[in-house]
Length: 327
Image (tube, rainbow, N blue to C red):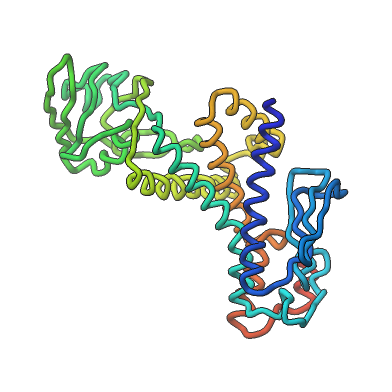
């Protein structure tokens, strides 16, 4: 059942991506010859209008074949009015961007749905106070619930990190302890910490650790839209930063999971519950969107680079460059 769920999630996200390309192409009057979910031998196909819709044997991908566009032979051209090549470079860029945009939009919708049903977050409850830290000397204790910092409401643990920014600024912290609110004043101290990528950094800290308790935050319909935008941007930044760290050598390629790892994690998420599955699906969707925007010739980002070149210099890249970079 988990494997089936993984295949359905991947196929759905691929369908959404290709649907973005398809709708944008049709909007600009480009003839789509084939809309396929999957690669390889076609196990089912049906022609509707002038477009062939197909399900192919390998469901880990998909493609939209537009008239005049041939990835394996970039020199293939068609000057017909309904061809990809006949359109203005800006229109082609929009068609290329539509796939990743569809993935970002899907993630946004999923995050909104989860927010409306309640996000489970790490509670701002102190689990440990580091000895000889600012929090220790100020009198903060294990079990204290942080309510606000400098009159900014603290809803979850990550809000604490956001509030602790400047080691030169005094923090006004309100906590809840044994049914009573208490106020503390302290200055952060620059301490050594590690990022999620294992890098050692210096950052302002007060010397506390979370208890590990969780809480559910419910959002109104309007608030859910803001949360959806925030989570989509946050996920995009994290994935982009991961790629940068991979290039810099901070992250080993051995730590990156391929399609098998994605399927395994998705299967496990489906066992946990629908909310976990939706959050993971949103993250994978953002991942597809970001990766497809990379300036690699085989991806949408690579094609966008070519079209941008033509848009700026009023001529396409030379045939030699196209062949060398594409094949």
